[in-house]
Image (cartoon, rainbow, N blue to C red):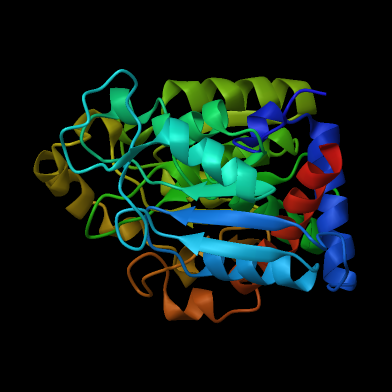
Length: 335
């Protein structure tokens, strides 16, 4: 059997996604076990984390496994990812050695590596995690790069807990203001999972500059066609919110301004009214609200929205623990 990684949900069929969600729900009902007894996972963090690190470490522990946490460039050697390069810079070792050595030590490798935010044509290649997958001889898990597939599963599980079947539900993925440009990873992933679950998805953003990368828009169209949903883009707040079952908020930077954020800042600053507030939520079909967290209150969403019964962000965050277990055990079982 060829080695299977968990880099993006787009590599997984709807049936496989449903199976992971069912397993995550089972772990939520019965959190402890020995499914990872004697197994280990290396967690490599090139960027900060709270929920991801905690849920992976605890997830392994709850199932009898062990997690090793590494921060290359801080508590581990800086790594070079480019092929055929003369290593006369900061990096002390090459990914070709790192991935193969770790593969001799552990059963799984998980990686969190954000874009550099300098050139989207480079960042969209997702070189860091692809290099790990290329050189590792054990399964590699994406803990967030330019997509965030584990967050997708936690989000989908929270929605299924609230609604059951998600087919045909109106889902609004709304851009929100943030004082600085952020990664498009969660927005890309929300688009992927919502369309894969057969929802009628509206991408709400201030201008066409904020439409997501054509790759993910194309995947969304494909997923919608295959699963009975739809995908539309809107710049009209009231029209998008009206009748929505789900409002999912995220801020992200405009790709045409990637690496030139000062030029984008006036556009971003002019759309602070995209905040999720009570007035907008009253337009929905008694809809739920969620966010991947962390969230700046009264910037992305108001206190009233965050503290309302409609907010399922904490449920989604809890579900990270359960879906992480499902992903790890599924990859171990396939080996």
